[in-house]
Image (cartoon, rainbow, N blue to C red; front, side, top):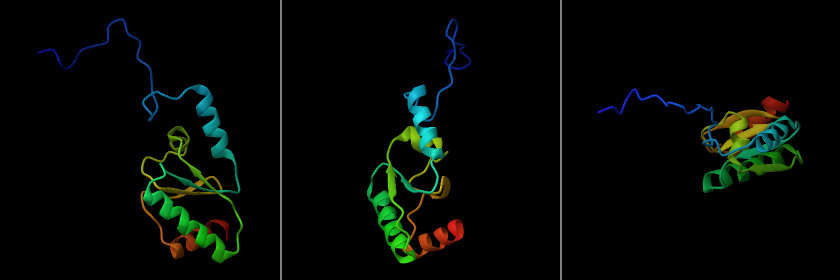
Length: 118
């Protein structure tokens, strides 16, 4: 059959990232720069209902704590991958991923913010 064990003769193997190799050095550099920016709250996700629900809960939690931090909603998959997140939605506080793969309730976000910034 010859389906398995075939070698790429004459083809150079390249490594690719999680986006299937569609990102270039410039977009990866932008993602790393965005990741390095501190003192921020970010929601990572495609913009689906779950991502929007996490953003709403985060806004409410920030309001309860009296924090006026702006929330960035990151939808660029190369930037999301720069955080090492494979399951969205994700919550990033001050450059650190504090939750991923689930929608936190407002009181859960309050606890996370108090722990990270407390």
